[in-house]
Length: 189
Image (tube, rainbow, N blue to C red; front, side, top):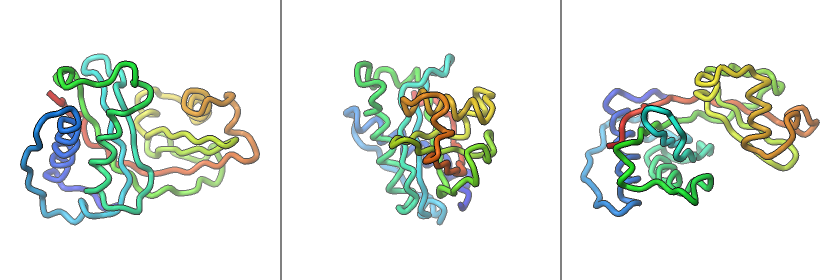
């Protein structure tokens, strides 16, 4: 995955923030695209919103598919973040923006892990499929929680996939890993 320039990293944050504002009724702002080939590379993307101060999640949705250009994926992921089903009864509002920070994770392609315990928690995100369900943790989850590999898999199974804690041990379980270039967090307001 080609790394973004400092200018492009700022552009990514501005693009995602602009999409969020437009989705909530603000007019589109004019932006100029940096001439950086990394912005045209195919990549996946997650957009996360957290409360400033306590880091409470307010939305996190992403696209693991790395077959489309980053400039097309970022707006789609940003708009989807406002429709995070976990917050359908308490959606993000424009008035809340000054209290929020934005983080964009640019994802490399999924790579099969040799086994469910063969991944590098602080540096690799994980995508697990088991028992007909799927779940994903970005690499920053391991950095923020300090969880071990087993703890990450247990929480992924229970918290994200709605399965029993040891579902990652099932014979049909498949783990894939991915890299992520994390941009932010940056204040939205």
